[in-house]
Image (tube, rainbow, N blue to C red):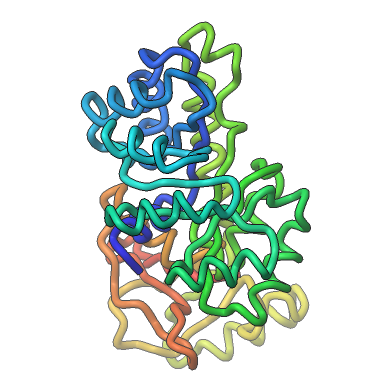
Length: 310
């Protein structure tokens, strides 16, 4: 994974923005940062795109800015000159791809078919925009195409909202998700982004899909006895094999136990909580080297937190 891909993956959600007025970019970038996103894609659908990218780059340096709807090498050149860190195209445009590769500029061309994937692979590209995502078959189509092209990562964009965001986020071949629903045209015209901040925060939580999974209590040698009594009182849903409450025999652990929180992607969620100031423990690895869980070092009421996948 390149540094650009890492930055995009950890953010996980890319607002796709069409700006009529470049000056709006400053406040909009600040709103996305406050809402929890630090990557943006400014589309070249208006004459203000290049200037908007320049303003974002200068006034909001914490925002990682890319250029979208890049339909020619000339547009890619203008985007790069304005400060764009990556290029996104709606379809597979060989001339744009060739120009970006010559300039060492990260490019994510749009694809929706296996033939286009193979064209991208021939250029050494394996992170691709899937567009239009929902209209092209959504997650089911992505999973079908990933079977023969397991080396490819996707950035699905098109028709995605907070309602179906989690379906994409749980699929391991998705690097990040693009969407335009977080900014309303009325807010852009009014240059007021309180609603954008709130919608962005909700979208970030939908991206991670945090949900309580289990609580485990260090009960020492009497763990089995506690489980038996609760099972007798309240039924098998509370025994130590259940998915809500566990009793552990480990007496060496200094904490009271741990709480497990489910999330759509453990590694992305770990990057998210780390940005919020949490320190992480080492990740547990599964049989295929994938991250099974990541623990937080901080304790909450004597309990540790573990992030686990759905």
